[in-house]
Image (cartoon, rainbow, N blue to C red; front, side):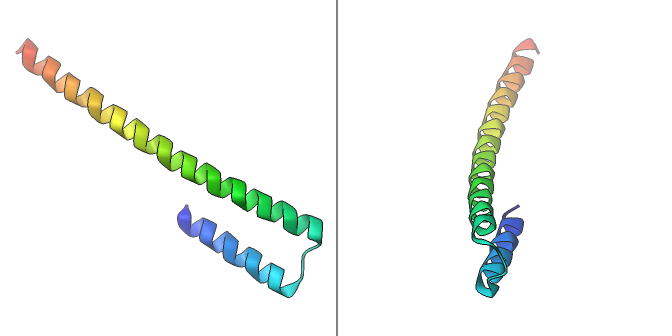
Length: 69
């Protein structure tokens, strides 16, 4: 997703340089790109938390299995 974000930023910069966007559209695209960047960051953080939680539960599962044996 990071590559996509970079591509979007580059494309927006090209459009800004050419002046091919009305000011309202340009502002909207900038806001949308900022929101997309924040959502991507949040998504990565949530994935890390889920992975850590999953690893913790697998450890307790192993312990439980060892105790039952």
